[in-house]
Image (cartoon, rainbow, N blue to C red):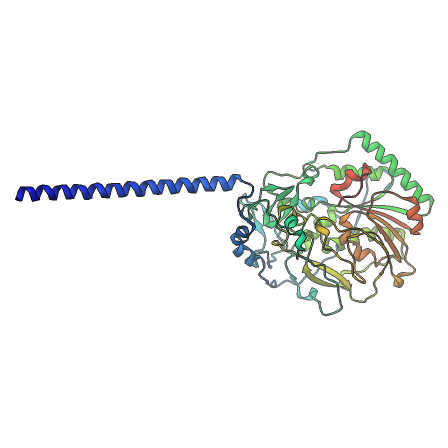
Amino acid sequence: MKKTLAFLALILVFSMLWLAGCDEDKKSKDTTQTEEETTEETTEADTTELETTEAESVEEQTTEETAKETDSMAAGTPDTWVDTSWSDGELSGGGELYNGGDPSGGNENTPGNGFTGNGSSGENIGPVETPTGKVLIHTYSDRPVARDEDNSTTVPYLPMISSTVLPSMNEMYNVPRLLMKDIKPGMVCENVIIGYDDYMFYEDTLNDFIGSGFLTDTVYNRAVKTLIERNNWAESHGKKFYFVIAPNKNTVYPDYMPEGYTMASYRRYDQFVEMLQSAGITAVDLRGTMAAAVREVPERNLYYKYDTHWNNHAGYFAYRAAMDMIRADFPNVVIHDKSEYQINYCETYMKDMAYYLGYYSRLKDYGPVYTLKSGRTAQLANYTPKSAWGQFAFAYEGPDGYSDRLYYFQYLNNYNQSAPNAYIMRDSYSIAMVPFLKDSFYKSTYNWTFSFSESEILKADADVIMVIVAERNLRSYVNGEAVAN
């Protein structure tokens, strides 16, 4: 009997050990299976362009958005807005050149002036250092950083606002093309290059940046011939022709491009300036002007972070550069100092790259709106509406305000009756300059075109003929293509 009980006990012990071993084996298999599933899910998420709903994507970044929307007034340094020492340069040929300083200045790896302010995270972070040790001049656009500029109660103003997407536009504007967590330096998606500090760059500007895509000799010579003819016509009618080139965003902020991209020392921009010189046309090269502005006011973002375009801070610098050249030929033009403007900061609708990525309503940016405190401003006298399209669908026209939906429009400033008249051919980069240009002339006419229409110029009774074109649109200009943006 005792032997039997001992044998049964032994069997029981072995059974328990066997069951325990099975349980451990099951746990091990479950763990392995879970790890395999996790790996598979991770791989699938990494290799699929979009494997989550918009709601899930929104949930993933709640913390990030909360941080980005934190308001924080900057500490310390008020904005002095040092005036650039405007200087003229010389190149061979009959045309003049305004270069606004040393263009290479925008590519210096130097920190800001010890300034610390509210970055997109709302923290006092100052200059940024990349993983490879590159020090970036840190800039901001989220909120006012100098209390003397936040004069929102001084005079009425029309804010450029609209992040509310119409219901019919939701699918077009807010279908994510990648996960929010993948929007980081080096990512390229939907023609957007993600740079440092949330800066986004237009991939179509890459050829300009790296120094490829030059004009062929045939195109160059044809363009010089055409420009000479236009300049000769202008001079024969007592008019002066100016050509303003707005630098691409990565031309002004080259160090914010991700690793692996280097700005060439000679590019199509340089080739085009030489072409204008050969044609005897005054070229306003703004690279030096923008580089000086980045160094002197690092707390001021000159371009929107999520858009290809510059904002009104850059527009003011560009305006001063162009008008200083024009004043040499037309002393009666009116030039307003920055101190004459009230500056308000508000949310901007200009977020084309956020639109391309499908996060138009999620990513917010702010920009300055300049208003003359004196009220001696121009009135919209005539215009032809242009139907809304793309990322500009939410711009609007106010009683005294400007809308980029207008194809053709004309301002009249009765306070400047002794000033000359201007006719301006333009693309979308002119948007940031119009608020200033309209108050420097008596009558200023703006046409969203690259066509040189002698009849339109004569009808506008223009003394000054100006072209404002973005660096990325220079090839379109010489090829006579329609203005796209």
